[in-house]
Figure 1 (cartoon, rainbow, N blue to C red):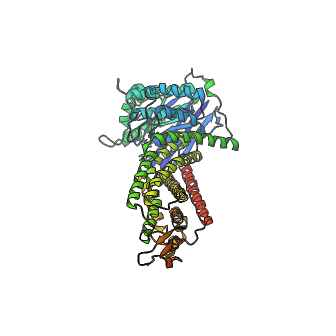
Figure 2 (cartoon, rainbow, N blue to C red):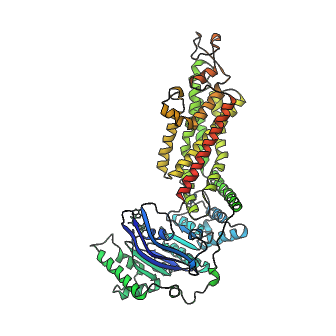
Figure 3 (tube, protein in one colour):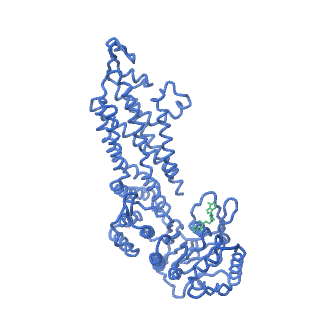
Length: 604
Ligand SMILES: Nc1ncnc2c1ncn2[C@@H]1O[C@H](COP(=O)(O)OP(=O)(O)OP(=O)(O)O)[C@@H](O)[C@H]1O
């Protein structure tokens, strides 16, 4: 039989302030255990420590947590068989309830009739059958209620039949009936699947409280009671703290061990309760598995030996491509349904194209218009990439969902990054074509099909690089306001050093020898400049004064290459342009690889 046990677990801050002290416990397969205590008593911290979750360098954990099978180290690691239901839901707003379960099932390796049955079973078990085709909900489209989201979160994490389930306040925001239903379902799940379920919970009703097999009461991180729920009343009676009849025992104990509110300091009372619990334990000894288990609990078939899985390289490749395919399909559904993902941006770029086309309307090839042509190209490249900030909230929603799923071992950062890139490609291409189709001809940029397609190429690479930068920044610091500020700053930097506002020839050496060479907007700007000015001829003014000197001055004309020269573009050969396209691809690749490592860091 599998068990999760912990001994002498101490959690402190790095300044040695105790959060959880001397915690011991044992939970056998088939049992559901509650961690209870007032707010700030250390329930989440204990739960995280049991789940071996990284809590940052500010927290230190000492002691042992063991996942054992028949008293021996389990062949499978706890992280491989467990799932953690967080306090926040982190669902994808524009998927329906059924879609959410379906894709999670696919990601868990289910398919065909098994997947269908499992989805149906969970929809029924969590009371979501009537909402199966309703969207989870987005900021502009109301979806299911908060309580239904909570139930969906829990249901989706049972898809792959985890052996150990940690739940951080799964019932917060739910009414007592819904809370009862969830805990009741988890109890049945634990019993039927031989799973271990550990739940931190605030204030369950009496009927919900009675569903738990064991309970740990914490006060300021110290254990006041850890044992069977049905012995709670008896234990507290024996230590002269009789729970009045008709009183919810959980509520009564929580009031007694709460330290934040109420009159007077009850620290001594709490210390007294902790000592009494320690004395009781010393007298009776820690309970063994046999003492914890009910005599009738002999579901041996459920406690099958977990098998260790060693994956070959070929299996991994197949797994990554399968998961990439599932994630790509899910993202495509989102991209189609979520107006914020791409649809709004397509209209935004269309509006910008019309704005640009009417501001720089039908320029002609007189020298007075040369600077307007140059600024139009700068605006297209720089401002279009700046607008990629609109992608940040969409990406952060995906990231949060990714983090939840990756930490629960459904997949890793690689398929997430690849699918995000692949699904972005067609949408960014549509945005590019829509923008170019209007802006290019309205401004009267080079009147050739080749010029138009080259413009599309540069703008497409520009948007890809801008979006990849957003992915890198938002993956590194997935906090909306910070990612927004950093992306705006980075875009300002790339605009400033790309050689338009200050020509490369006079750019400060620090910027020139560093950021100028890795500035994707610079390659886009120079690429567009070559497309526009190479092999173009402009008229000097009526008195034959030419703003740019070229070999055509005697004919009162300016060769476009002279304009290129003035912004520091001396080599405009096809090989140079090809080299810049290559550099753009490398920049996009590097952004994505760095983004991958940022994701990897966050789910370590
Ligand atoms: N990283 C940290 N640095 C310093 N103190 C921390 C840190 N994490 C948690 N704590 C402190 O540890 C204590 C326990 O926090 P925890 O979140 O585990 O409590 P909780 O019982 O789950 O509370 P709630 O029911 O309100 O969610 C709190 O006083 C909290 O301020």
